[in-house]
Length: 217
Ligand code: ATP
Ligand code: MG
Image (cartoon, rainbow, N blue to C red; front, side, top):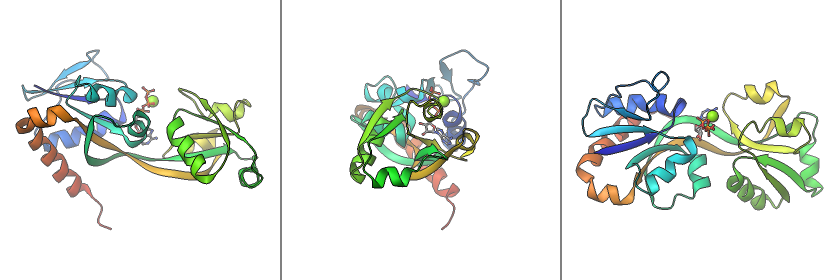
C-alpha cells in the first residue's frame, strides 16, 4: 500500500490533475466527506488528509510514503529524512515582508532600528534578516499575521503573498520579496527503496505532467 499525505484546499485541488496523470483518481471529496483516509481507484494507493504543516512529519516518520508540501513548510520543518525529487510548480506564491503603508521600512532598516516582526515562518524570517544584518525580534504567530502590525504587536510581518489582496485590505504594503514558493513532492527515504516499484511510476507520471504544463520561457 502506498500512502500519500495531502492537505485540504489548494494543495489537494492542485495535486488532483497530477494524480490523474498517474492514473490515480481519489474516490471521495474532502470538502464533503469527514473521512481522513480517502480511497482511490487503485487498490494499492490511498490518500491521508493532514494539516499542511504536518505533511513533512508524516512522511519523515513513515506515516505516509509520499506527501505534497510547500517550500515554506519544508524549510520550517528542516527536511530531515525526506527525499525531495520534484518541484510540482503548484500552489505558487511568494514569501514577503510587509508593513503598514505609513511605516518607513527603508529608514528603519537604514538606521539600524530593532524591528519587531510577527510571523509563522520564524526560520525563514530569521535567516533572511540575519543575511541583511537587520536586527529583529521575532514574534511567532499561528494565523492572521496581518493583524499584528495593525494592533501594535509588530512593525512588520513575514507571510505568504499571492495576489496581495489580503495585504491591501489591511493597509499593508509588500516591501521585500524573500523567496518564491511552490509545492514539492516529498518521499520517505526508506519507502523509496522498499516500495520502488510502486513509487517510481508515480514520480515519472508527475514529472511528465509538470513538463507538459510548463510555460515555455
Ligand atoms: P492551516 O490552514 O491548516 O492553518 P496553512 O494555512 O499553513 O494551514 P494553507 O493555507 O492551506 O495551509 O497553505 C498550505 C500551503 O499552500 C502553504 O504552505 C503554501 O506553500 C501554499 N500557499 C499558502 N497560501 C498560498 C497562496 N495565497 N497562494 C498560493 N499558495 C499558497
Ligand atoms: Mg490556511
